[in-house]
Amino acid sequence: MSNQKDNFPLNISINQHLSSKCRTNEPSQNVYFQKLSNVKNQLHKLLIEAAHLLNNFYLDPASWDVAHKIDDTVVTTADHSIHALLTARLEQFGFNIPVISEECTAEEFAAFTAKPPAVYWLIDPLDGTYGFVRGTGHFAVNVALIYKTQAIAGWIAWPRVGWVCWAFGDKSYDSGAFSFPVREPESIESLIQLVQQPNPRVLVSSSRMKRKQWIVDGLTQHFGVPAVSSLGAAIKFCAMFRGYGDLYPRLAGTCLWDIAPGQVLLRARGGEIYRLDGSVMNYDFGLSIKNSHFLAVVDRRLPGLPNFLAYLETTEQS
Image 1: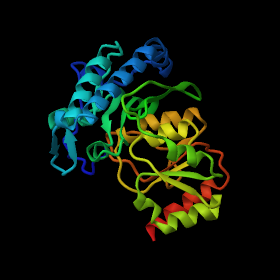
Image 2: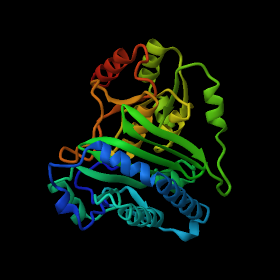
Image 3: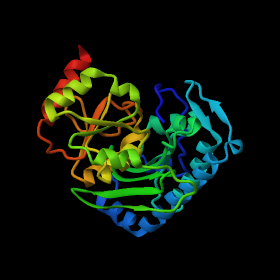
């Protein structure tokens, strides 16, 4: 879930190696790609374990509590449990880099932002806490690897459906998706119906986006009449990666951990996440934890894409 204040006490689990990682002479990306290849199956198992734990919480509401953070967003026992699991396991993989999580203390956040390391894990243990609390089934586990402000690896699990999607690389990618059995799984009938529609198939975060007629008008003008479906949290990126959507416009607040793994998934499919000015999204904690408004696409060669981005930027500002 996203947060709207830079002084929000994020949960950034910074291990004891933080100070040693604030250096400029980092190993090349290829070193990390090789390490990822070595632990890929372990990462798959970790995402499945986290998903099962979240499902157990979700199906037993009496087992978790809800609290409010200082910015009035919600956090649950489940958020903290998955945070503890992921941070402990990722630190055991031998990358010797910090693990940065949404569920941190203010002190940890201050230590990280004062001098961010060049390479780190970036995670959202429970992306879509509101969906979790409200019982929509729309929540995810997000894990990304950031290298010099670029997302170079991403894993996303959709616990209620039993999906894991993953990718890592630069220009060429090792990527894939698989399913695993879950208790009382949610239906994906709405996605099955969406994929049967002609392009463009547009995923949005809530029904409120559907009511923004100027966005629908722009989509129609540049791509044809859209088929629009609401889907919460980072599971939109899983859906796009698996062929269930073409575009995802986001004109509301998100934070770095909400979208970093999704960007890697899209890149592996030939897509991208663009700011409305046409620049490619990156992840610089030195500037802000918050993302600019953006458009995610599964195919960066989509005809009309530059014009639609310009339309979004101009119309939003007017």
